Picture (cartoon, protein in one colour):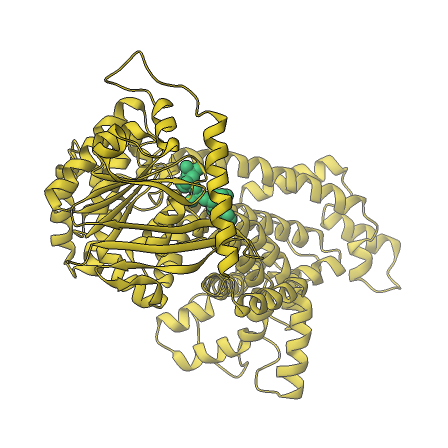
Length: 335
Length: 294
Ligand SMILES: Nc1ncnc2c1ncn2[C@@H]1O[C@H](COP(=O)(O)OP(=O)(O)OP(=O)(O)O)[C@@H](O)[C@H]1O
Ligand SMILES: [Mg+2]
């Protein structure tokens, strides 16, 4: 069951990524704006411009350009960034870990907060507390990530400056890292002071990304829990004398997480999209903030590389969610 | 005089926001230790309402307005929720109507059979496992070890009902409430399950409230029975008296409406309209009298 899901998904992933590559490639060439014009000064001669165009292969017909790029990608060569003049793959490898740590932490946080709120709301059902919780959650649902980001900048960065406003860690930290997963690495190697500094830098962007997702999870999970709580098996467990908390967590939760997870997977892809603007606001050096620069500079090779990475992330997350849904449901697990 | 196992007295319940629609009208019944008591009546008569009131799981629309439910002399209606849970959990259990929905689809049978034992008897996982296996054997489950590892969807309806019966008797409760435990099952399985409940009850000396709309079932497994119509007790007594010398016209009519295994030529005459009219008049007179007092 799980193996067949994996094979099917891998095939679909390749087709999807190819489609994404084609569409992005075409859109970027059709859209106005010239990367060469962005990179050189106003006084450049026509022959200089032509030389540069030839160097980046931009003088070739579209189909040829695409073929060259695709052949490169298949060899692991994503080309050279026009604006940064560095290998695209190298740039991505440098920046991606930061975004993965940010998104991973935000997602974990959202699941914990959203899950706790849903359980609490279910425990409080038909009491005043439930209405209050639902109301607050409804408000949170309406506030997007970048508004949180700006609010945090004002509150915790400017008015009451307790948290560092930008970057991934204190630049004066001169400790060498083996990987680019700074947080994971410093925790694993026991360098907790550095881990603390990294976390302090991540609090605001993580919260900004996590709160909207937490609100969605809380809403969906609470609906699922309410539905499960009126099922006969919960009634029977109640007759057995199980406590209210045990009914919610021990009986209802396991049957409510499946559907919640499926919907959360979709929402998590929004979270990855949200990193673009949130990383920008906190000058967090991930692929999100790099994407904005790449677009402003019409850095075609870099944009293409980034889009493929985002696409692969979406596909991987949804695959993980699908597998988790199967793993959590005994009826699916045993075919 | 000894205290009965369960004594419901003058229980009144209403439904609706205004609380003006009675669902139970002054219901009284007693159940002795080891007695199987049938609760009979057509759909909407209030059978499940009585069962749920005893178990403390009435839906929120229904409110008890008077009376008492005493388990071994202790009035359950005076307890707060936590105390009630601790009193009832180990002492009263339920065999539900629909075995398809009464088992948690996400938990193995073993977990669902042992959780009560671990909670109330403080058993270790190993002891609870052994006891659960023993219970499955007692309800004549084939391959009990495999069933323990199964999820509910891997079992047939009859097997699930056996699991639920095993769970209901697991804690040696004083009282088991069976709310139409066979209506959702195949006719062939129904008789086996009825016999199983009766034999479990006899072996453990358990009192049983058996909810049904079928007088044939009452004749088969009940010692005494209470006949309800619109939430009011119409007739009550030993099953043999009730079936052989019915006093109330409604009981007689219900028996006419019931197929008889011993008299195959008879039965299935619908309850005549004038009997219903008489019952409704009786209810109206009762409500009138109640209003007069209040
Ligand atoms: N949750 C509820 N909210 C409001 N009214 C209810 C609710 N449950 C039952 N009732 C009403 O209470 C009355 C008695 O219902 P009850 O379920 O006790 O009947 P029953 O004898 O068990 O019938 P059945 O054979 O259909 O199970 C009915 O008139 C029904 O409409
Ligand atoms: Mg009923």
